[in-house]
Image (cartoon, rainbow, N blue to C red; front, top):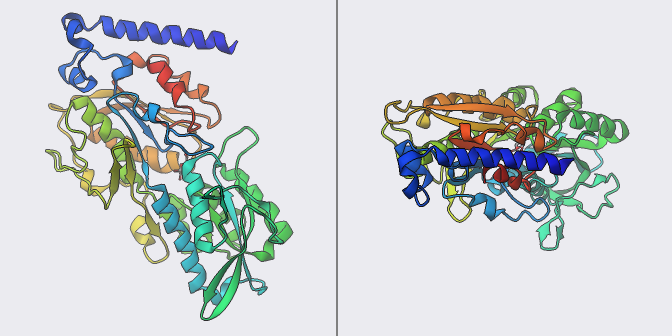
Length: 431
Ligand code: BGC
């Protein structure tokens, strides 16, 4: 059954790519050796396998080892990844939590047992960004344990007695006094249908944890704001327990005024721009750095090393992160506001409208749907890109790939996989 469906899809893809080549008319002879960008610039049709492709938010990689999927990242000459610097952000998140504890040491230990207990919501145990965040919190709080040369990022389940092997008890010294720090519980927030980073699951988990060891919980940490806010609203707000997330979604930033501990901005305004900008540049056949490290004719430019870094070997752009706390949250209240240095409209005359197919792995993901997509929708106008947005169910790749039935109708693709291992589900359709 599955095989039959696969064959049908393949046959359809083949037919589309053949007809794309066939329509190239008089240029057909030279077509084979011409780059996709030049073809696009010259207005001739391009085979799907040569069209610009950007992976975003989920980097093609092995979900067990984290090793990058270089075949997917080098799918063609115009393939890139856009994400953010996971390690820099993870370290920021861990440091933000540690500094909060140090600053509030007189009140943080709610039951006065000398143990600062925290619980941790894990997004997806196979997603490298999620793994980095878990490690960042454990490193900063001294609870990290190395397994096979890397910090263990496995969930512990419950660990109220401190006996878990994936973590150890840490220590924090403030004003000459030493406090024990314990990861009381952690869990991957995956719902029964298989969706990860699941906010509702996190809201239920905090209820379960609080009812059995609530007075021991002094801090709540989360791999993202979606889950963090769900726990905050379900329990920690009323119980005045600082809760820390990641993403700087507008609702989480607003909650800082009500006791949410803090969050990290992964500069979604820069990422959303880069996602579409690399496609625009490839379609225009211009240097990929245009409007990125080098100002374009409209004045759009980012600052390398401040806003983002580019790793050529990994074909990857990584936005840089910023900590958002009670001290500076006023500057981050609208997560859907585009970044001023890259907000100038491109001229239609020299940047003709192109069609882009773009998917979001889970239409219910808080960060992607409430922050990232609204940003993309503003940049697509500025960059003259006509983007078709497809929202997945967060569970199966086929729910999304089934809606890429006619790749020949698009000039470029932007892909957000359900699982980081699954790049081939998409590239097969473009071959
Ligand atoms: C975000 C999460 C989001 C995940 C989806 C992460 O970068 O921080 O909020 O759920 O991407 O892949």
